[in-house]
Length: 228
Image (cartoon, rainbow, N blue to C red; front, side):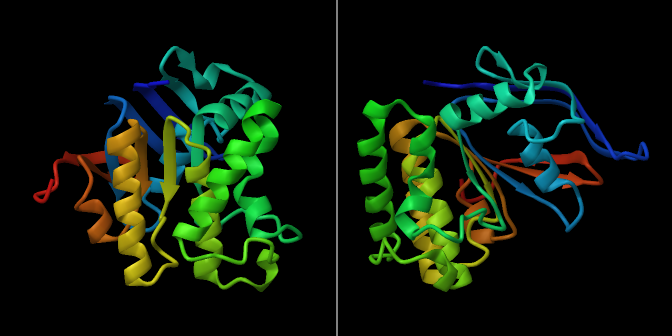
């Protein structure tokens, strides 16, 4: 499924009324590579979470294909994410009591039973490609970089039409980060996945089709990297 993105008048205020995010318009075609950069606290992650429908107070329009995400209730947004959005969180969001494979194949729980074996096989393959061969080991014993790779495998194994990533290379050494960047770009080019990634990593941002700069919750620049 291809999901173009159309955002209009997207705003988010704090409980005290302070404007945290103000984005009048943003569009992206399916298969786009979009980076988001900005200083800490600029609103990058807030924007990413708004695009995923994770923020209840967000106002305006976030439309993925024919679905107006912000008009759905929390359960409807969760169902849409389970089917259509893979997410790489900066704090990993892993279940400590589970092993690497069970964490990486977690989205199988939200898929029809007939799809689950293939997703679990993709999760195992992604883990191995990222250098994690002990798939049954509980993530409690994993380093930060290993946890990041489990979270990445989970998002990529879902093969969702949209992949949202928050600092996906932050906990990785340079060699693993570069391999991940190659994998993410290949996923977009071969499967038409839309990738939107918050990052401070120049190596990742240089591979994007567009790079958005966020300042004070607003879009300050929308540029094409020189290397693109």
